Image: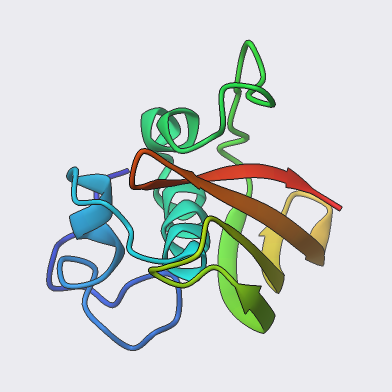
Length: 127
């Protein structure tokens, strides 16, 4: 699914997709761990598998990533962040992502770890 650059960004910042996560999906580097986490949530929402693979650290990236097209991501709430700023090399973002699928509605709660290498943030894993 492609999202109009003028549409509201799925990550919940209130910005347009083009001014928010769309620019990262188009190749701009996310400056913080939280920005990367938000852009990855938006990638799940729009089905951008390539972006998810590219921003997953090679040491933990799955060999195959299949997206479930039946899942509709509805809302993202960032609960807390720890480090992950533009001058950090590691960061943690805890979030709640609400979704709907064939079984109803649900909430994914996760504490994600991120690492910055070569000036780029990567999703490492969930703890």
